[in-house]
Image 1 (tube, rainbow, N blue to C red):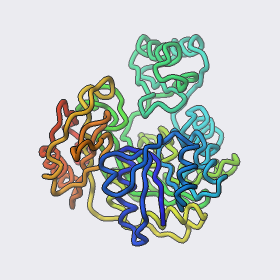
Image 2 (image 1 turned 90 degrees about the vertical axis):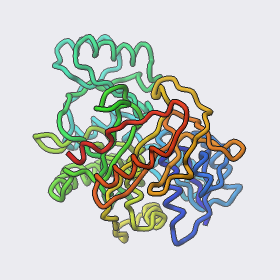
Image 3 (image 1 turned 180 degrees about the vertical axis):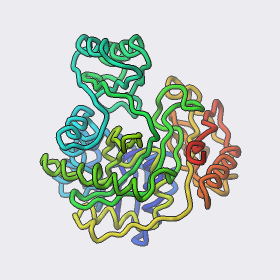
Length: 419
């Protein structure tokens, strides 16, 4: 069986690593892939957003299934195009991926179907947004409507900062067309939780919980990034909270998408906030989260390939998920300066010395048999342990063996999980 994975980051490396463990022994390809993925898959130089190129490659190479992992090609309709060509594809159609592609759509969906979320208002011009802010309380949350690599959210603690955020997003186009419209949202307080779920549009199977760390610096300071680390499970996500989420959030979301004529098949990511008034939805993603995937998939015991096939065939009800009891922690090693400007092309040392962790490559390349940096987030070091403290300790012990010029990482990943 031939499988093509679309994407080239740490999430795709984790997916390739997991699929390579399948008893079905698939032959793996990845477009474009990265230096680490080459261990498990044949990497091909096709951009993840090149829908025509992916379709042509899949047909020419008799690919049996394509796993579309990143948000951009999903929102652009890559699954639709592959399906039209008769190629089995894992991931939501463009109609369903809009749940991530448009924050206005997702907020309106939650309001319409009574799914708990923060109060909000939407705007398509800066003047009206600023007038609204004059009557607002702070802090408040300003979100670019479209895809912005996980960075299109600004928390403003004053009117002046909020006004500046609106002007940056809508007038200066800090996030490009993603900022043509914005959502101004009530600031919620509580503990964040990430829950990914497999769904075939009818059945929904939640994965084990996780916690991402978005800010670049220790103590949740600095700019928002695509994620500087993650751990699993969340210590506050117990059976009672999962039951609340299933009843009020997970199943209502799937049913809402069905009712809207946009059935969702693939992985649906729920970004949640446990507030004093109950769990609220912060955001949806239409795919595996990154870096949450790097701590969730190592704990998955059930064959990932069988799950993906069941979702495509709408028989997920036949699947039972099984999980490792051990906790997992992932530390992201980034290029100095990320998420702003940074330099790449530096040699990476010490990967051969890592013994008690799995290293997922995010932004690497191989030149003359040497791994070099090739992105903002470079590596994700994932370790497992009987407790979360054990996993975190192992991960940082292995991180200490790796070096490259201007290497940056947070020193407090997982701290909130063990307090």
